Image (cartoon, rainbow, N blue to C red; front, side, top):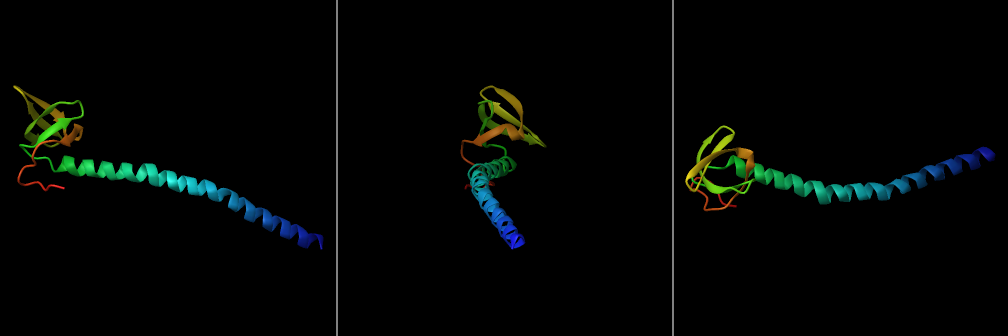
Length: 107
């Protein structure tokens, strides 16, 4: 009799401990969906934009320099701003501002 009661008590303890972890798991899943999914989506969109850069695109760099792309070589981009030309890393292009050249698609 005691063995049966002991088995039932231990079975109930395991069930309640699993239910105790359920809210924590739900919070972790919600946190992941709210923070990490949009960040990955934004990173992917930025990478696609950087890969589609072409000569003649108007861009803004991460440092705030606004200019036109005059040349692209591997991971470096030449940006002409005013009278000077500056070489920046391709990944440091924050966004495209002007009209997209004919070869690139508009989204």
